[in-house]
Length: 286
Length: 50
Image 1 (cartoon, rainbow over the protein chains, first blue to last red):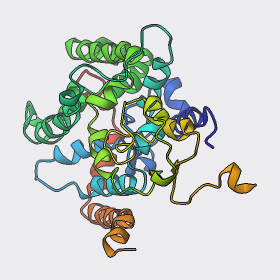
Image 2 (cartoon, chains in turn orange, yellow):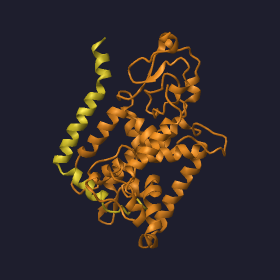
Image 3 (cartoon, chains in turn cyan, purple):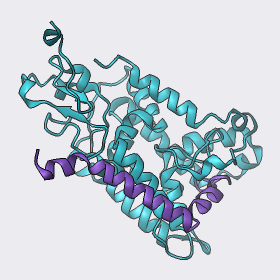
Image 4 (cartoon, rainbow over the protein chains, first blue to last red):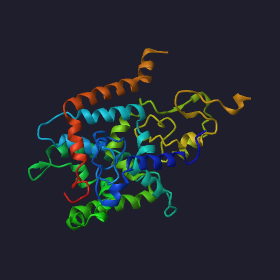
């Protein structure tokens, strides 16, 4: 049985681990070491003063922004490795911006909702973000003579929260340059944070391009939730517990499943579990 | 167990292997260098002033 708050502990630990460059926070500078050759699995802005790895979406855009068109094999490599092994487990357990939304959703302020109205249409927003902002935007959108990372520039709330706010608070020169674009991004961040109190992870469900990529791997990734139909008593407790409102047959296979494991905890007969091995039931032990 | 079911169960292995090959290709093509150069400078677009 999965322990309560285990996921929260892992999320906090991983966020500290991937943003552990304390010197950067103290001096308003960023880490410039060799670890930044590698991407971290989650959406973690590389301009965060504490970041010790690169953001996969930022890295993808950096390669697409090059003058000579090239297939971004290096970044795709990281995405294939993380995706094939973990799928959207990354979103549920390892993403710092996911952690922020999870914590905000615990605030008992509004009546909670799992989804926005028109969810069946809006859920495709993350694919639109991936195609139009991350790919097409990075290839064809110019700022002066250079291509721009359109997702980072116009949307990414993780960059504003983990990059802009700590850097601008510790660096007078940068603060003096903040203008309309910064306040546009700040508005997006605030809107998403407020929405997170009511809706479960609105950014992950509707806008995150990384979630769109990892969602594709969900159907065959190593880490997944298995359902043993023969044990199931159809109590639907798992469906009630699922924070993104998936049905029993969608759990784990759906690109929306973030492997949070709430369904595993909710199942009284242990017919849902991580991994391949069947867990031994209490009555089977006796 | 059917062949297709085994393939489906082990697809993650194929994906991981493909990822490692892609990583090698990217590293050989200097793409990790591009990523590093972008990541060690403050990204002005990311923080909303670029």
